[in-house]
Length: 244
Length: 244
DNA sequence: GGCATAGTTCGTCACGCGCCTAACCAATGA
DNA sequence: TCATTGGTTAGGCGCGTGACGAACTATGCC
Image (cartoon, rainbow over all chains, first blue to last red; front, top):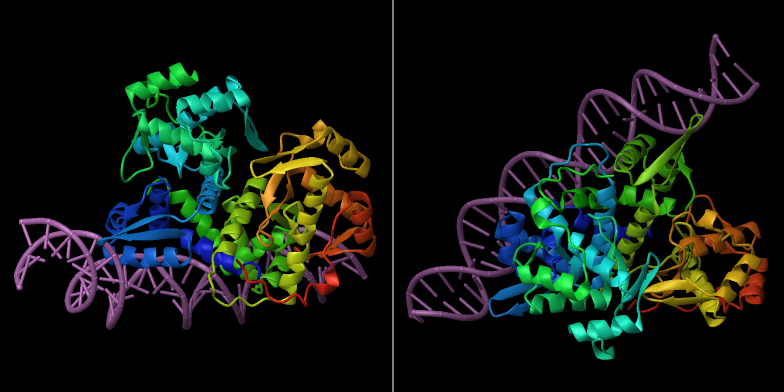
């Protein structure tokens, strides 16, 4: 009982719809203001304020004050990792029960940010391409960048210098809850997203984790990475996957 | 909001003291009956029954019926992993606030099971020894067994055959919430625990995750693994660590 | 200065849910 | 057969906490 005490607090914080929605929104990797989060979570600003206070005092999120705005963000990769692992379990759960799927869901499944890197079909496709071209080695147990891959990523514009590295995980497989396959996380994953954004290959929207792949992005990923991307126009026709 | 829905359910399940206690107990890796769990969580059997039903329907735990007993266990490594990641966040949390430490806590910090492998000072010491002797390579990003290490582990009696492997993670670093360092998880970690138990090196108690290191165990680990074990008798004198 | 907007504090309401006791079903063993 | 023990169902109680509106402070722009 003693051992479980803190765990309960943390889980209870996530176990509320409003707060989970806030956390999910922040999992997009961006900083958002209190009012934005209130809007996203469909609650009043006072209520959001309360929730945010709790999350901040529990160190699940961090805040920086800027003028009259307060920008909230996920406090650490450890928290992001936890949220993903919960999501992962939530995705196995739900047996035969009917699960409605919205267009938003489909977009999310196609491409989204996972804290600081790409996930969804897009994230997995990039990981697959990197593996196929022997730029990285990715097993369930861990990931590694080959010398060839290091050269490739540097040419692409990724900053893999020791300074950027700064003690954080370098190349890590991250099990994708929607695809149930691995994509690339860690510094490598973060840098790929950063470059894709800088190049205008992908575009993020402010209040969602969904990521839009631009036409150049599609072309660039095929040409540079040799990625095999699913045809976006066909997604909605495919119908509901069985789920397991 | 749509995306967060299931996540909320799962987190809310963990976010209750009684249920978290049950899950923590099952993280010992053993199967326990409903009555035992009721006793551990200090709740009545009817209440435990309710909680267990919820956990089972959510697929966080699984149950097998055996006569009039029902044995509950963690449903999958994914769930175990999730619980560990929550625990990990919970361990960073709690700023300067006073945290009472019981003897039980100290024992837990010294050696415990983490689902199916060893954790705590003991787990970390074993991992350190394996790394020092170049039996395994362990980085934040992943783990690997060297050919030398494979030979060593086989001689020790670990079953690393493809059959035992059966699609599960092989050698994975698992961040220890009490030590904040890595120990070995995956099949390798599980097999080490299994052998240590079979050799009478460690003993588990039924209703706790705490693990007792026997005298032979201490001797064996020093001799065979070359492990540097902390002196158990000194533990309580050390005083309260600052926590961060 | 005055107005608009971001965010917090306060007081109140009400719903949810965890808990218990009591009663009931199920399996084992004498 | 009946006692024993594991587990579930039913009903009712009470606390916790998430929700809101109203009123308040703080910052920035005209």
